[in-house]
Length: 435
Image 1 (cartoon, one colour):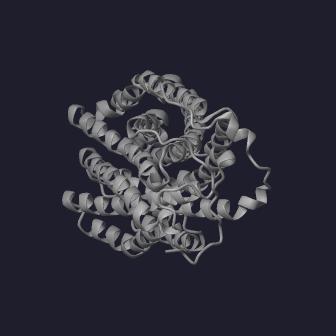
Image 2 (cartoon, one colour; image 1 turned 120 degrees about the vertical axis):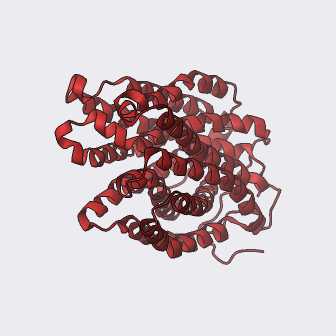
Image 3 (cartoon, helix red, strand yellow; image 1 turned 30 degrees about the vertical axis):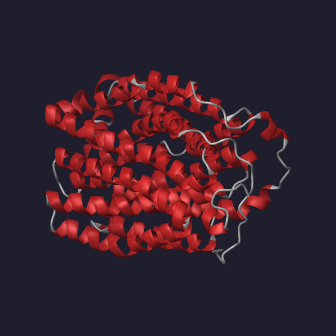
């Protein structure tokens, strides 16, 4: 069956021999570690705010911390462009190793930087600097690693392979939630504020050498023959894919980080315990990991567009009622249920959107162009989501403000998803052959 929406041609290229899932999983290990290090910052936003901002600014400390979380997104497009282009020039593997090394430096720095009480204004300055390095590193991770997975997979299993990458990102959410929950159980709130949150970052830092060793053993999927055979194309030839891709990924990331904000929302707006907030984060990570894998398989069977469009429409319909119920009944079972449902829907959007954009880009610019547009989407939309959500609540005094923001973003996302071409080989009549 051929879709009638054919605005953006799917680029044909001859892929390398597929790699076994065991080797593909090695990419996921490094990906999970990088996202764990990056996302842990938002989960400990309350504690980091207490440590790095003066007591006189305590009432705004959380807002400052969420702004610092957003700062990490500023350098993501730069990292995507520079390290992604490096992956197109030198190879996917060297680019992935370099991005991972930079993340290791940043996470060690964040874990060991003294707080405001010890070194004054230097503390938040160093916090911002290390956050910028984190953003650059993660921005440079997505393009090469996603390109690697697409090139390492059989055409009819691309959704599954890239779905595994999305699963490792959400595995990072799950692990961060488990670590945060464990720390909140073992430590008093004062100890968690004082130094306990640093343990989570140090755990991530300690396994950086393991991640580097795993990545060094990977094969390369992008060789000299691919660079030599690359056609000369104009940037305008990819403009439509890039424009739609940025808006689609932007909408999905607003939903993703808006739902991840539930941890902070539970503590700050609903005044729930830290332990319960991290419990909800564990549920979020768990359901998204499972959904990512199943979603990848589903998109290989029915296509990318039907899955992400249906899930996006569901988010538009349920997000505001979900927040209303949560505020009306701020109880453990309610926040866990709401978080689980929204997490499933978010995973059904993010994975297919990334797969569709990746498949629409030619091999010789795939790493750099994907890294750049993904970085822009994350920077402009993802990096501001939690800050905007908290700011809207503060300005409007309406706890439902984040839901309205997510609704508007997803409405735009649905329009873009309707405009992009289907890219799944099975929907194009070539489930197992090179096109």
